[in-house]
Image (cartoon, rainbow, N blue to C red):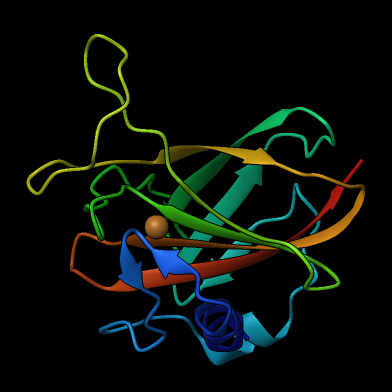
Length: 165
Ligand SMILES: [Cu+2]
């Protein structure tokens, strides 16, 4: 499902952080079982291969929606504060309307000590909260895929379904 979404995006000429989207991300950890069942409302956690991702916030139409992905170890509940940069971002989010007609790509908000937005650089760590600002143009169902890199280098892709109102 995620691979399909990224392939669709690639076909439309979308680019991922200045690079063409490549669905064959190295060492992907997205478990097919979790990806196939995309039915979590905004408040429901996504679980991908031992990682739990809670999506917090409200999906509002006509305003910027401030969402937060909260990443924990599903078995122990340990907040993961050692996420690594992946393609110069702390996290990547693909947002697609349910009918597939709109597509957006956002990044987790990373700021320096003065509050200015900056790239996620090697050696930095992030989490457990990854803030993302999303714009929903019309009310309805959207699919979101959040992608980030664990301390061991594995890339996790967590799917969500949200209702924007
Ligand atoms: Cu990106």
